[in-house]
Amino acid sequence: MKTTDAAAFFGSKKKLADALLINPSAVTQWGEFVPESRQYQIQVLTKGKLKASTKSAA
Image (tube, rainbow, N blue to C red; front, side):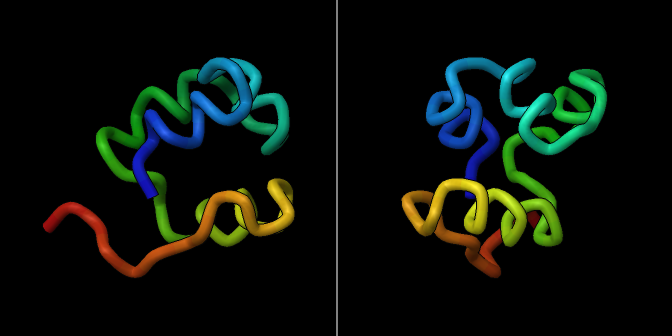
């Protein structure tokens, strides 16, 4: 899952961070891909509209 896709779904990186109860700076540090553990959390929060994937930057 790309960070930009998750941020777009929630409206911004700040709103994504708020939904995950984390600091916006943490979202900025993710880079291109959302960490796998956060992907599953986002999948639950979006009721499956965004899907966790095992593909990440190598």
